Image 1: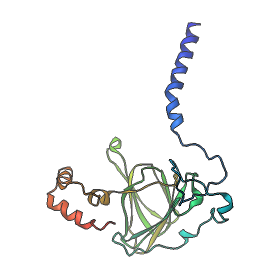
Image 2: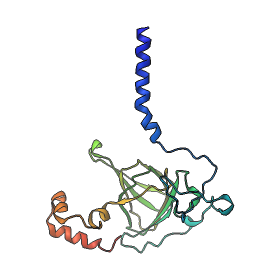
Image 3: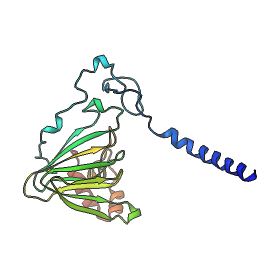
Image 4: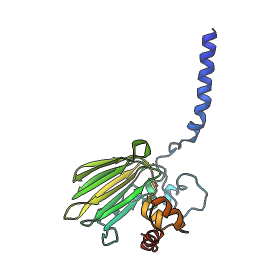
Length: 225
């Protein structure tokens, strides 16, 4: 009897401790579709308010935006075509989104982080060096491989990663996320193009370089990305 009471008390304690975690998870959709009302004024926490189905049209489940290659004449030599909830309102509340990334020879998708999503990708053209940097727990280890058309990769949520076109021709990839709005933090832009700027003294100390180097790098990102 004493053992049963102790077991029951232990299980009750576990349930109490788990309750906040359970309540903190995103709720499952309660309808087939919730086409985002991007102009809605109602306050929302996760996702956008739903348009009335009578006003949603019939194309919200389909998109041809990723069919066209992006313009890679950029400083990075790459172009990201986003297909998140802002571009594809039909994914609202579904927890998914996609991107297409095109690369000129020597182009890169610079080191960045998606704070709200795991990423899985498929190289569709060319040769891409895909790099993923582990956290301090893994000794900041770099995991990398050159992938070719038809090969895939996965990037755990929150880990820094990059892609670089090592081939002599254009390259492209399509990636998907388990979030309708995965978010992105470009490391170079975050460090040297923040608004207002991070004090030079802070970056100089953190990066162990002279302040003049930091100011030079800031000048490269003053106009954004």
